[in-house]
Amino acid sequence: MNLLFQIKSFLRYKLKARHRKGFGVHSPFVFHLLNYVIFEKLPFYAYRPIEQIRAKMLKNKQVIDLTDFGTGEDRKSSVADVAKKSLETEKFGQLLFRLVNHFRSKNILELGSSLGISTMYLAKPSSVANVVTMEGSSSLCRIAEQNFAELGIENITLVEGNIDEKLSDVVAKFPTLDFVFFDANHTREATLRYFELCRSKSHKETIFVFDDIHYSAEMENAWSEIKLRKEVCLSIDLYHFGLIFFNNDLPKQDYIVAF
View 1: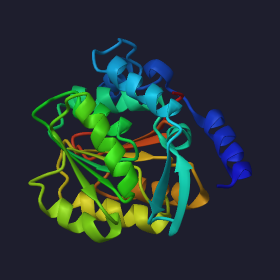
View 2: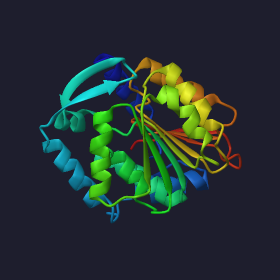
View 3: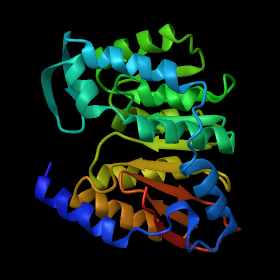
């Protein structure tokens, strides 16, 4: 990770970001999305139990073996360190919940489960939603499964193994994809490849959420290329997350929002 790059990237974002709370937004769809979903402050019922699981993970000193197919590196780490460095923040985890809840997404795919915090935010809005999450590290899979069981969440299917090898088959089993959260291999090539595979099952109401779009020059390039695709009608840059919409009733627009 290039710290200097990220500092410069964040400063560029702060200079360009506008539209907080919908100010200056002419699209009724985007105005409503910003005010009633992205900036919603109500404490939904699901938040507290999931954050209690996060707190437990942050205190867990157990050392586990990690397999990272993205970097090709195997290493050891404590669960607490994984929780500190890899999990979505409370702010963005809860945004995933609100997006899925608002758009009533039923067929949901997550690339990169980690300890399962973001997965639970995706699954909690509806017990009848079909949530499939993919994770390469077997030790993380076991802990994530324990976390799902602790909260009694039964609508999650965890696929263990190399996402590059398994994604095509996983996508093929979905009739359509309503919501995809991309939080796996943070390279341009992999991100674009995952996008194309998942796009094959997208439809007018599908939402794609990309994690760490300003993580590196590669990720920024991938994000820029995805925004320009003809099938993408709306993009929203929240710095940490990038949101993509395919609704062709919307004019093609690109928003950078101060979140």
